Length: 324
Image (cartoon, rainbow, N blue to C red; front, side, top):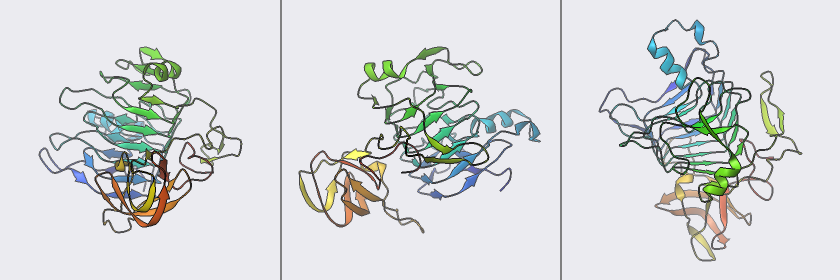
C-alpha cells in the first residue's frame, strides 16, 4: 500500500490500549511519513516485517501542518504512550528490517518491551532509545538484543530526554552508530560516549555488544538483501534471550529467567507458540506460558543456567534478522 501506515493508537484519551495483536510479514513503505506507530500497545508481536523509506518523500505530503512533523517522528517506528491510555509494555519487536526511514523513536512510558534480532539501517534522523523521560512515564526495563544499528552518515544513536544509559539493557547488538546523550540539536547528540566505555561502566546493562562490519549480502536499495555472508562478523555472535532456572533435568515444563521474550501464540488466529532451542540444541514448541514457566510440546533435557533462544543455526544465535 502506498502512503499507508500501521497506527495502533487508541481512539481517544481514556480508551483501552491496543493489545495482543500479531503483525507479521508485511511491507510498510509510507514515503510521506510514519510507517509503524505503536502508542500505546501491550502484548503485541511485530515480526518479519519490512519497514522501508518512511518519510523519504515527506515534502510531497499534502498535510504540512505540525502533525506532519509528528508523523515523521514515527517514520521508522514509534513506541510510546498515547494520551491517558497507558504505557506501551510487554511487546515483542523481532526479526524486522528497517531501511531508509526517518526517526525511530522509543518514547515516553515504554517499559518491559523485548526488541531483538532487528536491522536498523541507513535511517535519516535515526534516534533509537530516545524521547522525553517523564517522571510518571519513564523509559526503562526494555531489552535490546542482537540488533544491528547503522545509520550510515545520518544522525547517531541518541539516548536523550533524561534517559540514563543504565535504564535499559543492550546485549549482543552490533552498533556502528556513534552513541550519545542529551537533548538532540538537529542531527547531533551533544554528549558522545563510546561503546567500550559503556560496557566497562555498566557491565550488567551493556553486554557483549560489537561494532564490526555487518557482512550483509547486498543492502543496496535495489536489492535490500540483509542476510549474512559466510564471512560476516555477526554469525554466531548474538546472545541467548534467556536462561534456564530449573535445576538440571528433563521434562515438558521449564522455568526460565524471563519468559516475556517468547510467545505462546495467545490464541491469535495464525499465531503459534515459539519453537525454542537450548544451547545444547534441544528443541520444542511453547504451548503455554505461565509466569516464567514454559509448557512445551514434548519433553526435552536441559542444564541449569543454559541459554535459550528461538531456533538458530550454528553455535550461537546470529546478530540481525536472518540466521545463516
